[in-house]
Image 1 (cartoon, one colour):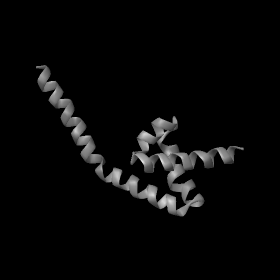
Image 2 (tube, helix red, strand yellow; image 1 turned 90 degrees about the vertical axis):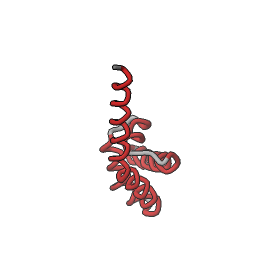
Image 3 (spheres, one colour; image 1 turned 180 degrees about the vertical axis):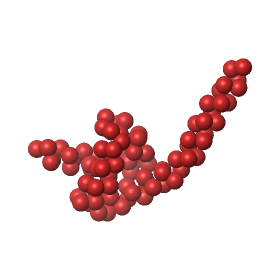
Image 4 (cartoon, one colour; image 1 turned 135 degrees about the vertical axis):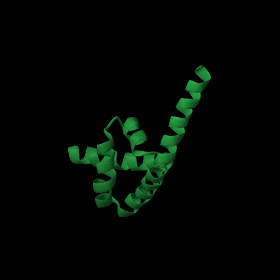
Length: 87
């Protein structure tokens, strides 16, 4: 059923995020769903299925969110470093 399919996906994504310490974006890409689907799965569906697992996932996602501005800054820096070399 659809319900079973969704539950299965929720657990698969949760496991993937925990094993790879990855972002919502990376999980969305891997499972070929949107970022909002991953978010909804982890924040709304997972807590109803497994509170403990949901908490673990939330910790990883919050850490990634906290580091997001650092990654963004590094990506931007790398981009400009590349441009400098090209001159």
